[in-house]
Length: 290
Length: 143
Image 1 (tube, rainbow over the protein chains, first blue to last red):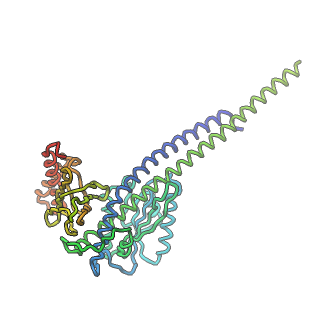
Image 2: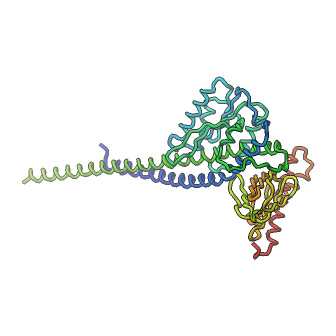
Image 3: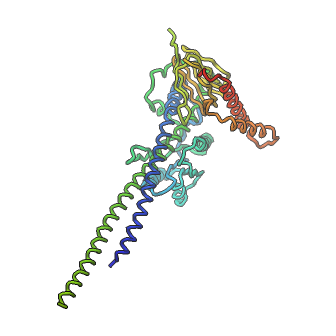
């Protein structure tokens, strides 16, 4: 039978946990806001870039570029974007499960992986995948330098034909409560996809004066396009991670509250029982002496 | 009838810097500076490293622009810069330090250095410094 003191200790310890989870929730909420702002700030560039790229592609009869070249998919590279830390509910588990599905579906091909985020790195390394590179501690604050480094690496490998396609697996931020697990093809760039990617102005048939040949512009535009795709995925994933953590910590805080309530009720019952017992003892003692 | 103003939009991968109406804009094209007035023929160009200035109802502060693209339409200019900074945001000391660093690297006869990168770094620092100087030279009431 636990004593009153035991209950007090348990309650105190749960209260401490609750304070921590509550603080983590607020931190995650603040980071989520920042990540959303960053994602929003990146949108105008991506939108304009796609518009310019689309009109450039439509101007070239047979667009030729290493990043547009399709090869039979024998060597597949996957960029896996996970969280940096745990305590984010099922965020990392879900994403890794989706990644594993992808790996199973492509198991006949030569797979290589670039994890972004510590959780994914640890899990994929343990699973024995061929890690070409790894990026950790980059998602807390998505720096454009990192984005460029990652996309330079993959475009380079692709242009040298060391890989035949690049996929990016990440959680797309939908709402605070839910994220979409997404697998997108990063390379080769699909001109069709660029065409339909965005609702556009009706001016895509304008005849531009080109200061540089259109092919040269295409050569400069395509890497920027890949960069902006990688950047978007990283920003989305970072926002989704913070959202998942916020939700997880909120329910943890609530659970701790429930536990405290139950423990307090139980403790009061035990105390009351002890008091009642004492009174009975006193009363029965008094009546026996009378 | 030519439009009187052009919409000038300057965006970088991390943010939208400028959205304004301009009467006249000078862009740092990869093949040299180009002045653009409203009603310009549609044009697409790569940008080099340089200074972007524009004039609308009032003089606007200059920007340093490092590479990217510009699309010119009769009533609209879209600048997709890799990096761009308003003159007021540029840290002069940092730019000077970067300049000194790049010069030192170029002066050292080290065969292993990335000439291209060091050259770009130097140009970028020089443009930043130039933009800041010009901006501070402008009397305060004109913008």
